[in-house]
Length: 91
Image (cartoon, rainbow, N blue to C red):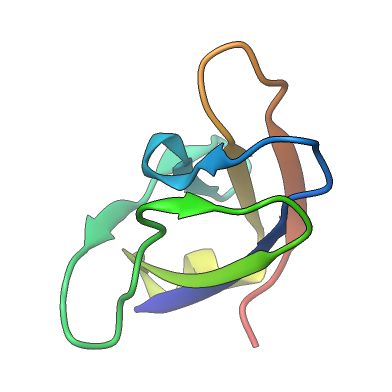
């Protein structure tokens, strides 16, 4: 299992609805979708993030050991936002 830790800082002038955040992980050259894992090691975004504040969350994904060398994490803050993409490997 891979756990991705994400921190969002709200630099806007209004509260941010963290419930709308979507996180996906793909792996390998074919971009296979990793399965979402829910459990005690996972703490997703929830509620709102006030102006100037931040919130961290952990998302878990099931993928084979061989897939951990080449991952792409896509974070979409909500409808109308441009996704943020991060690539690398699981350490």
